[in-house]
Length: 329
Length: 273
Image (cartoon, rainbow over the protein chains, first blue to last red):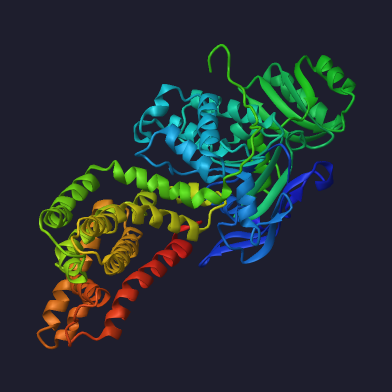
C-alpha cells in the first residue's frame, strides 16, 4: 500500500541550503530491498529520519558514509559523492551508531581520545577535547571506569561523545535514545538541541516520534526503502488548510441537534464522540466562526475550542502511511 | 545537568595528524599488549628459556668470532620457533576478534580510515610486540657476541648480525598474518588463540604423518620450514630432501594468503554490515 503512495516533499529544496541529497538510491542485500528508489533532500538543522524498524533508515546513513555500495542512484553529502569521496565525507562527519559498539575493556577517556586521534587530532588535542566532550555529555568521574561497567544511558552518552570529539559539521545519530529511561532521553535530546545551536546539521534517525517532534525542525518519513513524506516540521504538523478543529460540550440531545445544524452550515470532515457529552469535529467552510458560535447558542451547547487543525507527528506519520487519508473514525 | 549546565563549544583547533592514524592504532595495540599479563609471562619465560641461556654462554665462553653456525643452532633448535608461535597466538588473538565481539569496526570505519590502514595498524602493533621476542633479543645476543669476541675479524660477525636481523624479522612477520586471519573469524579471543596455535600444530602433525611417505613433506610444518630457512640464510647445509622452491612457497603462502583472507573478510563481510 505504502509503495503506491507518491512521496511528497513539502518544502522546496531551495528554501534552505541542502546538506545531504539522495537521488533514486537503491540498495539491496540479496533479495531484500533496503532502499528502493529513495530520493530526499536534507537541509541544514536538526532533521528527523523517521520510519518503522527495517524501513531503511540505518541503511541510508551507512550508504551516506560510503560504507555500503549503492546498486543505483547517488548520495551527495556536503557536495561530495558518497561512493567516490567516502573518505572525505567520513572525515567531516560524526556518526553515533545505533547498536552497542564501544570497546568494553577500555574507559571512556581512552576510547574517546583514541577515536579523536583516529579522526586526525594530535594526542594532546584529542585528550583535552575528549574530557571536554565527556563533561558536555555528563559523564563524570565514571569516565575512568571500563565501559563494560556502564549503564545503557552512559554508553549512549559515550557514543555521542565519540561522534562529536572532532567537532564535525554534520552528524548522523542513529536511534540516539534507544534503550534509555525518560530522564536519560530528556538529557540526550537536550544535548542534541545544544549542539544544533552551533551551526550543525544533525540527522536523527528514530522511530520514537515524540523525540523527533520535540527537537527536529525538518522530518523525513521513510518506509520500505522509499520516501513517504518530508518537510518542515511546522508544515507537517499544520494540518490540512481550511480545516478547523471544533470541540463542543453539552447534553446528548443538544449535541445531536447541534451536529445536525452544523452539518447544514459547514462540511464535517471528521467527528469524534468523547465520553458522551463532548464531540470534536474537524470542519471545513466555517472559517470566521460566527455560524459555529451562533448555532452553539441556539442549541444550548458550549464551545470548548475552535482553532485551525493541529496534528501531532504520530498523526502525520499514520496519515503518511495511509496515503494522506484520515483515520476514518 | 546541574545548576550550571556545560554548553557545547566548537573546537577551534586543526586536525593535523591525519597521516598518523596507522601509527595511532599500532601504538594502541602495542600499549595494550605490553600491559597484558599473558604476553608479559610469555615474554619472560621465552626470554629466559630461549635467549638468556645463549647470552650467558656467549659471555662466559671464550670465542674468536660470531659464527653463523652458532646463531643457527641458537635460533634453529625449534624452541625459538615454538615460543614465537605461542606468543603470536596470544598477541593476535584479540586483534580483530575483540572488534568483532564489540561491533567497534563501525567506530573505526565511520572515520576516514581504510580497511587496509586499519589492518596495517593492527599488524604493526602486533609485529612490534613480536619483535620484542623474535628480533630484538637475537640481535642483542649477536651484538654481545661481537663485543666479547677475542678475534679481530668483525666484518664476518657483522654479516652474521645482518642475517640474524633478517631471521628475526622473518619470524616476527611469519605468524602474525595467520593469527589475524583466525582472529577475524571468531568473536572470542580464547578461540582465536587456541585456533592459531592448533592450526600450526595440525600442520606439524600432518607434516609428521606424510613424512613417513616422503621426507619432503616436512616443509609444511612451520617449525621445520623455519628451521630449514634459518639454515639456508646462515649458509648452513639444508637437507637434500627439502625442495627450496616448495619451502619458499610454503613460507610465502603462510604470510600472503592469510593477509588476503583477512582483508577480504573485513571488506566484504564486516564493514557496513
